[in-house]
Each structure stands twice: as C-alpha cells, then as structure tokens.
Image (tube, rainbow, N blue to C red; front, side, top):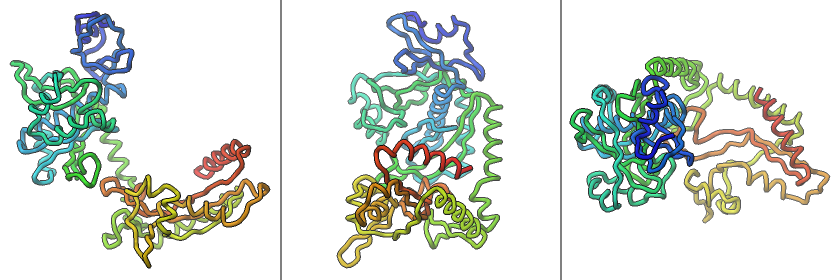
Length: 416
C-alpha cells in the first residue's frame, strides 16, 4: 500500500523491503499492471506490488536505464550524435545513434568508461511531463528522430520506449548534489531511482541498423550492451556467452569444412562442402524415411512461379517486402518461391478428389527464398535460401483433431 501523498519509495522503506543489492525493489506495479517509478506519489491510497531488480520487469527497467546512461555517455563524447531509440531486449539493451562515422572498438571502451563515471556519480532519474506536444517539440528541436516519434505518438511498436500511454514525458538525469539537469531523453519510463542502481553492465558490440527497422529510412549505428543485478550475474552471463561461442555452428562449420557463405554467392546463401553434404544427405534420408513411414507422399515443386500464384495465395499482399524482386520473362513476372504451400495446393486440386483419399499428406524438400534484412541474417538459423522438409495435410473437418494429434506426436518423435 502506498498512502496518498507519499512516494512509493517511502512505502517500500516502511515495509522493510531492500533498496539495494540483487533483490532491490526498483519500481512498483499498480493493479492495472502499469509500472511506476519509486518517486511516484499517488493521489489516493493505492495497492501496489513491489518489483525486484532481478524479476523480468525489474531487469527490463535496469536495462532501459542502462540504455539511457549509454546514450548520455555517447553524447558527452560525440556531441553531434543524434538519438534514435534505446529499448531493453533479451539479456541486454541497445541504443541507436546517427553519427558521422561508425563506432570502433576503442570508441566502445571510451563510452564504457564514461558510463562508469555517470553511474558512480549517482545521477537521479526524474520524470517530467510535457503539457503540450508543441512544448516537447521545442525542447527536442535538435533531435530529429525524437521529433518523429512525437509526431507518431500512439502509432509505434511496443519496443519503442520513448512514447506510449496517455502522457508525453521526458526523463532528466539530475546531478546528485546540485539537482541540475545533466542530460534528458524522451521516454515513457519507468526507470531506476538513480544511476547507482546499475550494479553491473558491459558494452558488447556495435552494428548498423535502419531507423525503425525499415531499409527506406536512414542507417544508424547501434550499440548493444548487457546489464545485470550483480557482478556475479554479469560474470556468469559472459561465461555462458563464451561457452556458446565455442559451440557456435558458424565456427564449427568453418573448422570442420562443412559449409561456407561465399561473398560471390550472397549474404545468407549457404554452400555445403562435401562433408556438409554427407551430413545433409543423412538428415534428408532420415526425414524422408520417417515421413514415408508416417503416411506422407513425397512431391517436388519448382523454385520459381508466376506472380499471379503468389497474388492468389496472399504472399504478395502480405509478404512482398521479404520476397526477392520479380524476374520478367516474356512479359510475365516470376518470383523465387518464399513458401511451398501454394504449390502443394495446386497438386491437390490438379484432379478431382474423393473423400476416401483423405487424409492426404504431402511433403517435399522444398527450397525457398526470402529476402531477410542484412541485420538479421545469422549463419544457418536465419538465411535467405533454405531447404525445408515441408508438409501439408488435406483432411475433413472431422479428421482434424486426430490429424493434429498425430502431427504433433510425429514432429516430437522426429526431433528426438
């Protein structure tokens, strides 16, 4: 319970809950589910739930606050840098910047050192609400990307932490001694009480990223980092990353001469070497045998098709941005297929079918092509060309429950 006219921090202290350490309470949650800063003062007595820094919500707040410190450090060192967005993500955070030249490893070292100074200074995160959108625009006049977010407030993705909810707010970083504003960022919050509540962090890498994820927008520089409730937790996370790197399939693929991604072929398009070909053949043989034992019929379809097929299937309407551009031949547009489904449907409708043929199960090793953004292409797990052991089942409505159960049992057995 937070009594009217008192801060959430006072209520937490009165309840004897920890204010520091790996179990520190960093924000509170209202009955509505909304998270509030510890400086929040309710107008009426309000029941709240204390949120610890090591909880999922607490970690998000920690990492979002660390992203603010990162942005402040970057603008301290590179005053010309313009701010993009800086949300928490799984195991960490990032912030996007518009800068004249890409960040280098030595830049990250300087930025990390400045972040440590900001954290040690104990700057207070203080929320301030704009009375009008025009007021926000005046203050953010030198931040073009923030101005864009103000203009589209209420029509942005969930991971855009800058705007959202019923108010337009900004968070000031205040000097612990004088209370003077050191830095500020458009943000809906909430945040930690102060920068001292960031116990452990590390900057991981930098990369290029398009503003709001669209290749039509300017390319920014993104810095990734991670933050944890304790130094031990950070140390363990880095150890796990090191162990995972040793087992990275991209590293093993090169070391064992299994596959490669030649620049001459293109990003996300794998070439399998003889040893990799053996592994792939054995996997295909295993999958084919299991599918045939389960009553699937093997089919084969081409790699390209007329654009009209994908218009009918809906792929051009919904997925055109992730399809390769069309090829025009003899006045007709052809596309590399992104999925096998339309082709299997054509096989099914190629002649009249009797209910006695159902359920009809088809599968193929179908090669598909998807124009994934360069920033998300990753080894063999996110590619632009792949071969799927893809299947489709045609059955009656009455057969659906049994087929679904059979399918799930089959998939789990296949993966074991």
